[in-house]
Length: 184
Image (cartoon, rainbow, N blue to C red; front, side, top):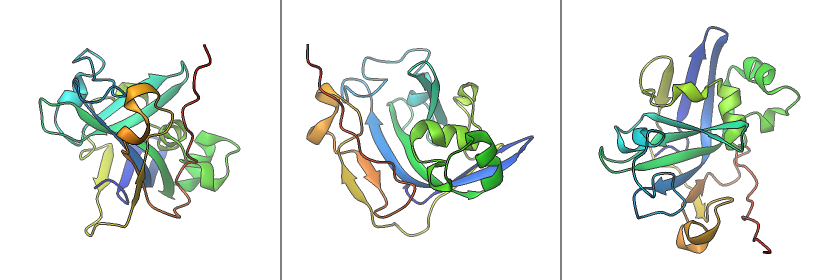
C-alpha cells in the first residue's frame, strides 16, 4: 500500500522525501471513466499499461504536473494519483520550490506535491525503485479512510468510485472538493 510510504526524489539541488497521506486509484480501459486510460492506450498513457512502481506524470490545467504510481499488472492500465503528503526530508528545499507555502501545504495537493519533490513532467515512465527515486512502503498496513475521488465528475466520480484513500487526521491530507456541477 502506498499510504504511509516514503517517496524520495534526488536532484542536483538536494533530496526531498515525502510520506504519502492521500491517494486516488484509477483503473483502465472501459472500467473507469475518470481514468486517462479509459479509452485505451495512447502515447501519453502507455506507461499506465506498463510495469508497476513506475511514474505516470501528466500536465493538467495548462500549468500543473501531477504524479501517479502505476499499480497494476503489466498490460492492464491502472495508476494511483498521489494527492497529498507531508515532507519528511528536505523541508528547506521544498520550501524554496514552493515559495510562501506553510509547511503543512508544501505537499498537500497533487500539484504542490510534484513541485515540492522537484519532479518534472519529463520524468514520466521513471522507475520509482531506482535513482533518482526511492520508495519505501510501510511494513504493517495503516488504518485508512476511503471516499469518493476529488473533483471527478460524471460516471467516474461520486459514490460509484470510492477510490480516494487517506490517513485520518494526517496533516498532509488535502481538503475534499466535490466536482462542481455544470449549470448548462
